[in-house]
Image 1 (cartoon, rainbow, N blue to C red):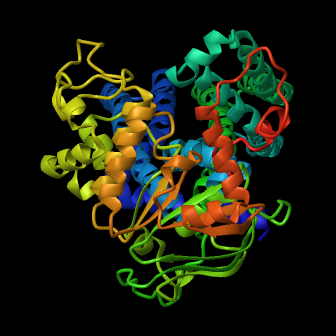
Image 2 (tube, helix red, strand yellow):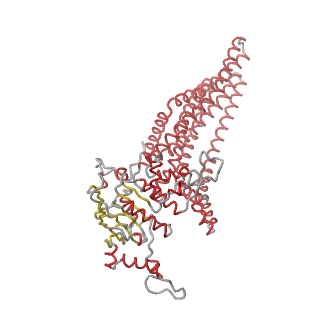
Image 3 (tube, helix red, strand yellow):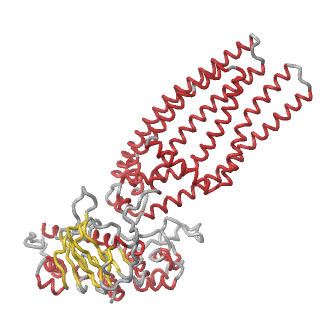
Length: 631
């Protein structure tokens, strides 16, 4: 079997197994109702032939009434069964959609690191996998539909064989080109969807930009709506062009197949009329032949289209199977080591890292020790490697070379979930969930979501309790205007939108909820705050992390001067380390930049003078202390 065949076979087995585990009883009922709908047309055709022959022959009234009763009963069954099968098919479909959706997102949550979500090919596959979950029901229902069509075709082919074996072979042979053509179209359609995937993902990106509040202010201020709409329409045009080419291929192929079917049916009808004229066929035979040819052609067409549709669905479902069976992006330890509470410290030993062989090195042999109970500050220019180092500490990635040791235990020997259970943190790009205030803080420790006392205690430490408690519904108030709560379904203005600083404190409360963890990571925790709020937040953090192991990343050097250890990253290596006074005495990178930043607070610029000397012009641009999301 080819590799393509192996993938399709695996997808088919997964779909059937999913359907059986999700809805066994409805599947059995669905199969029986479809079998009934397949047999009923054949029975109706034969009973109709017998009635016509009886009327033109010498059948008794009792015999005709019996045939009529059988015909009426079969008609009733044929009318009811499609509704039953539709209901049962819906049951199967909903159960499979729920199961496949749950399994898909269970699988994506199983990736312990970030690499898959930064890989465009994986994101394209994930998008097709989500579409594949919607096609799971189609695979099962189409398979049953194929069985139904096959039973119907077999019944009418048997009827045609009784009348004319030669015409039966002509009708059957005409289905061969249709099957080949439809399978080719199915493969091309699936390939087309993969090819236009990047354009459709870009289209979704631009449509999201143009329809959400996050980008609305800048887009309107800079009048960028037309530009973004142009980008969106260009991607949409690319996707439509691919689909249009596919539509033209389908139109030409299916038009030719329809013409072939019409010629075969017309020729067969002429032959049947001529045969009846010479007495070779009875009137009932002509009726049966006409119905049988139409039914066989229709059944074969349904069979061919069903095979093509199933092939297409299986190919899409194959992306779902690939995702749920994908190996984790980080190797799991064969024999995981229990992670004890931190007692000595965390060591980065000759750590090198780059995102792929094609990317430059971000970290170049970092040696760093975070002592237990110490407050360590990490500073550096854009691209120095600060945020990457945090990703490695959380084991979102593994070092390309070197090792990170937790009390001497390599993090690669520990289950990622066990490690992260020991870590708390707030990131510069923290999430603003469209949840209630309670849930926005509660996601920091979902086990405490129903413990309002703990949530409020964390909010108090972050200085946001009074604000959240004073909202219209207190901590149950939605922090979004995207949705409405069940109680306020008729009032679209119930949601509350927080300011940037208020969101910053809410994210900090989320981190504080994870109290008692061994390591707290604070990545630009005061970005976007005004000076008074910044001072307050840092005072609260100092109290909270006193005696705890913490890592603070900040581009505002006045907020790190009280750290027990300040580490300066430059070009992916540790350039300096020590306390604030020590680093100022060394008069190196840290001292120069600290004075540069401090001078901006003390000196009054001469607006009439041209910028000269160090700390102005290009040097200010070069030395700008801002945090990088990738470095």
